[in-house]
Image 1 (cartoon, rainbow, N blue to C red):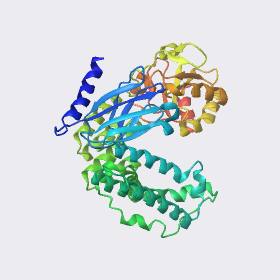
Image 2 (image 1 turned 90 degrees about the horizontal axis):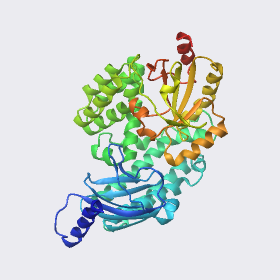
Image 3 (image 1 turned 180 degrees about the horizontal axis):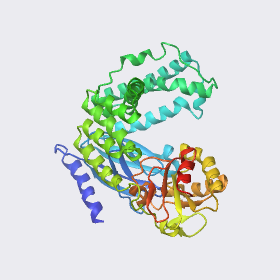
Image 4 (image 1 turned 90 degrees about the vertical axis):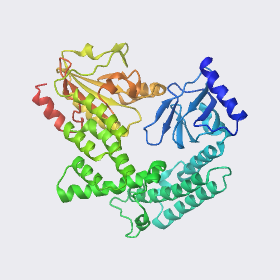
Length: 458
């Protein structure tokens, strides 16, 4: 009770001292039928992910000291987009089982957050329940559809009262960035949905992208769509550098990154790339040194250095991080120690992961080929606790073989954190003594996996 009292007193103080300057925002509310799992507030870039305590009755109160901008409250199933700046006092209430119809945001400064909910609904209306209908349109009709959508978003923000002018201007630019980003998605999506393999857009279809300024640091920070456009732009530059200079992707990426003038954009792109890329790097030290030579963001450097130091401990021959007492689909608990004496090929996956599911037929084939040999095949799901039933159902429906385990804390499980896993699927090979053979083993679909097994006389 005492923990809740301080924020509640703060709420009262804001109402009593309107002229007092504050450097924080206040949140309170109640979630009915809250899903199992953490309740967090997250920034778009993923750098901020802070837990918010929720009482047994679903109520919460918190004080936030974060940079002004748009954030996402996430209960494990429903994202609530909110705009936060110092002095705001938001009350957020909803039924998690009927989020769309029950979400209610009130309080001082709630207008911008309510606009964000309406904006999200507009985005859903654009594609409806069948995105294929939109992507199957011809070029002229597709652009007309997107222009109508952009106009609707612009009208929506223009008609929203009591929101900061800068927020209005940002959202108008964001509507245009969304439009431009969707243009970049058309060629591949149209080819897929219209079943026209090899389809190419007209020569002038993407001409509007020529006007984009790819060095706008402030737009990079607030607009996810602008950030995606910038990312696509530099990916093309990396691909061209790979061809011209005969470099691998990592070397080409860092070479291109050095040419980016805007520090915010350069640091953001290299950090996003390195967070995942470091865990897959074949030459860990070179990758780390390349990142450190390009980035000028000290907090990014410190974060990646922590990951680097942990990954150095995952070299071949080092003791493997362990999983302990993970629930086994067939019953009971299973730990890595229980499998000592055999090689262990670990597949880290989730029911929602498309690339993971594409590996299933190949994994079944490999398991069958090595059945009865000195190797165990272990699949560890990092699904959320709320998706536990989906996990069990998929195992039954897909007739998944091997040892099927459910990680105890999803992405925060010790085994996942120990291997610094940032993306899935991830495959790991451990020897009979519990030591690492490969922290990034080939996928089942890769012929190199059989070559690796053969070299080990499995």
